[in-house]
Image (cartoon, rainbow, N blue to C red; front, top):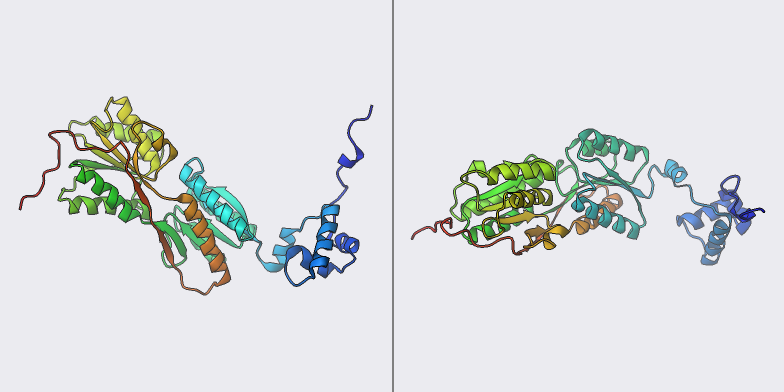
Length: 354
């Protein structure tokens, strides 16, 4: 018995634009215009050409078009770590906006490695992308792409201020607001868990933290600003050391969602009750923060909106390469949940007199 059908046998080769034109009874140039949308073609002719292409299984060769036009209708999206929900949501927002604008996306995760970031930039050049949206870890990839005359939008953090457009959140103002919230609850020993302060994100969040301490009359204890690594396990160990000390803080502000998870796990392992013995607040709300009990107070930034704004900005940059560069600053929201409460009795913040 013979199984299957002759219809399932793949064609010996791909159909060509010439065959589509012949099937539709038009010239090759008319068929090309009908399929690419570049140039006028009567609607009835356009439909006839597209039907012929569908019947033949013809797909426009984007790479061949790019050789003529020097770029494709694709954009590169380069993020630091898709395991982190922030970057996943940012990439999803960028992809949706690109589709709305008629672009496809090429997504690369450089996993926070400088060499991989530069390699990704080189790959985007080879693929002739029209532009790149990136969450950079240095200025190297951005500089390389700009030298290749490929527009870049830096997202979340900036390394090339003035050289290209950027889309960021109000890091300093948001960090100031969440630290002020802890100070108003009477906390005097407020620790900051931070991954780094060489990037604009970490640096601005640290500045906002210090702004709030100063405004509340709380002296800055350098020992309470703790570098906590780049993953949950490293953050947990740093938080454990901090919380196991004799003069431990009564509140922790974690500068991102990964650090917050590490701090939560450390407090749990040490048997510290949140918020009775320790208040915990975070920058960058994540789904788990509203699922645990108590929920975690956090700054919520809309990563998908950042991705959409970045692609829209890139689209405008492609349309007007000579326009001045700009930085778009998006606002964030402080979501107060049960993880923050008044400082434990006897450890309240001293109020200024007079």
